[in-house]
Image 1 (cartoon, rainbow, N blue to C red):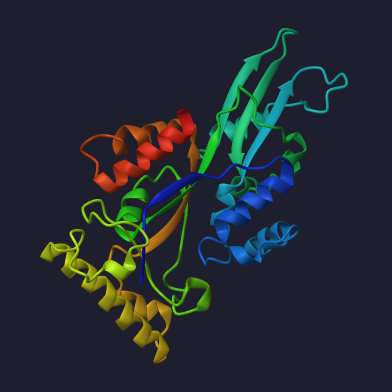
Image 2 (image 1 turned 90 degrees about the horizontal axis):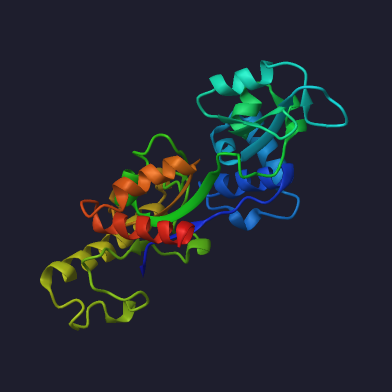
Length: 289
């Protein structure tokens, strides 16, 4: 078995439509841990595959920024003749619209939405108004958490976000790509250093407490039972039942910046679980310094 610390990283989205496709692929492949299949030109094919199968949830992680203007077209490619486009995004619960009056008197609309909204509503023509995020857009932020299954259960309670999670149903940890071992997250109370697997049963100060030693033995035993089950023909979705809450998982979360601020209010609080509080504080530091 392997023990690691929990961690969090911000996943920036690159520019343009290709950047949207790549963001969706990064998020979508988390479920099956198939990131090794990402190539320079695989993103569009991956997204097309998701759409063809009706598996559109990962499209939520592709953030789309649009700019529209009501007024005289002049030479402006973002000109829109009616309010219809603006109205539909204002009515859409998964989109945000900010209006801003420019110095020339025109009203500009800064729309933040996601690829699932576009494709499920058949609004692909709106992609002609795609833009870089501006100071007026309400930003969306995508984050990857590497944490225990117990902490992931707390993450997914924040229902205003979009989620993709590593799937224990389809992933077989007996495979070489996972080192043929189970990875666990070190809980805050264990007082154990990542990479010290050789000292697990040495009776050192880190594990001499009987509760901690019993915990480590349980993890080791769960790994052995899981490997025995899958090697004897059980599917991962069957063998996963023996895995404890400490098992490592990955969760990709995407949400509007103000929703993240609500997340921090709850999860940076002293009343939050220490392992959750650790991740929330790390993310807040990465975002705001």
